[in-house]
Length: 419
Image (cartoon, rainbow, N blue to C red):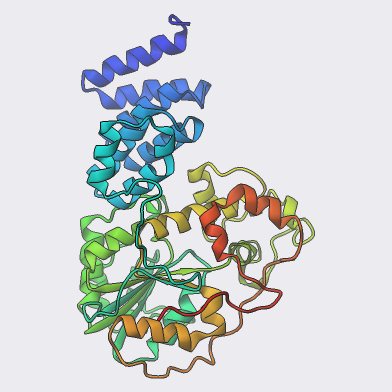
């Protein structure tokens, strides 16, 4: 076994790595992975090489795969944490520690990492300020949150929450600042069909000078680069209170907080079944072959680039299962970063005034009794009582994220709004 071609090639890659030729080393490791995709040693080495070449997203993907295959891999565990800390992603590093530490041998090194990251031992009291699963708060009322940033996945209800807040003339509201082609729309004075671009159209010079986007391949990278941060800070400077919503920034909450530290970060979460349905029925029209083959559909679902996200994550199964895996991963990334508020979309849709009052309270602003008649009741998922949902949810969702499943039969939100 010691003289197998894979071992020899990995050794060659490691020699290149030690010699400083990280790109060539990565090519060697990935050539091995082309033949043996689940070779743990090659995956770990490829992660290290990718990190040295600056491809952090690829490095994270390889480290995650190692630990999925063998959660007791100490080298990958510690290397992964070191990378995340180096990339200023301490929240994700804590998530890695909490997820895999039970399979890592107890040692002074593990204790050191837990202490440095502030991760308490299992069973210790954490004092998390969680009140219920409808509105979860990690923040006490304070006057240091002047702005509002809404983070969610596409098709989660950000636009209607944003539009409702936009009625308050104290807020300057920018809809999806990172949307592709926004600069072209503004400079060409395109028709504002959705009536969400007025604030941009009134500031063409700002958009021409500062606009930046977030590319699809950056969705799982927790960092924002300099021009993206500058753009957000420029928007935040447009008023005493600014509201922005983002649909591809679930992994960027910590970075958004660093860019606009006086913003209230709101994570809006829709029931995963309803979210999946909306992607297989974009704008009210079913994809070809649906809904008859809803639970066996293997075709496209990339209307909002969710199929591309599924490929990045290595999601498997039918379309609804791959979508569930994307939803689960992005919700986990957002929740790990401890947003100031986590709001269930269904609760907002049924009791909008209650939710809005919590947001205003956290900003230390008087609630102006906004017109919430524009908020409609939540649309139920396709066949929400079909037994075939259950095995898919069990396979694709982490236990913690089952709390976001909504009781459509009674159509009432669980719990009460945080005080």
